[in-house]
Length: 309
Image (cartoon, rainbow, N blue to C red; front, top):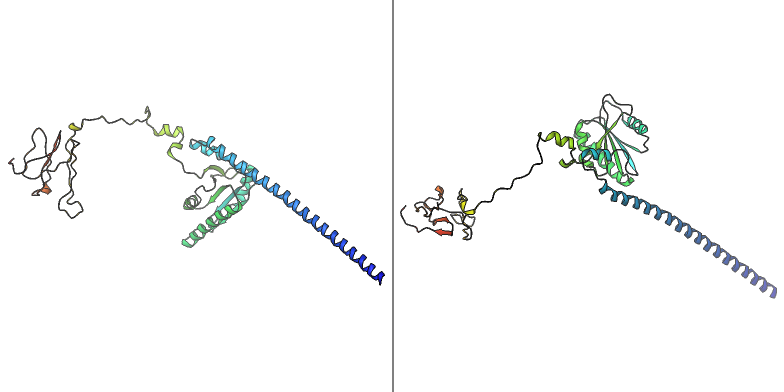
């Protein structure tokens, strides 16, 4: 009996030691996994910090290198300027194949590596085709945002109105470069034209400004109007509205006394003002019971009604 108890005790000790060893090994595995996760977190954090640093550096450099003319704008936006570009090939002609091969040839000639997204519509013949094209543009825009693209290189074969639609929907939301296929096409098939940006008058080139301005014309300056004595200003006259909007038959006229040039109302049958002051006459107010006011250097004075002219 004692031997059996000793055997059981030894077995129990062995099982406890095995459990402790297993727990220790599990703890070591958890520690290794946590260490690996910590290392991966540090790597991803460093990558995100590097990308943020590059982005902030571009933002800081942008005001210093911002173009001041259209020529500089075209030149500074040429080529690949951001880390993740994409080429968008749009084919809208019913009798032509996809321009994807031509775009690939152009990218190979420039030694540019970027994915090519394609929109293919066999002609725009009605509202249904137009709806499909607009929806495709909207879906590609959302897809570009999800994939994190930073600039678009646009190649288009189709009607002019399609380019107008693309410009209105994209509106340089990402930096967009426009390419043209001349006739006859060069070995690279396409040539770079300009970025999809709004051009303001101040961004015209100097040559354009010289061509638009007449010969010998200097900078235009606005001459200041000469100051006049308020007493020498002519009398203000003109039509008066038929009511003030408050139920009155006659207009309500403000007559400030601190300004000699004051609006005047003249009643039919009133006497001409003396001392060189002339009243205003409004034929449409003939017979009205309004008093007569004249312009006077010392202020607005009413004339005595009932005097013969």
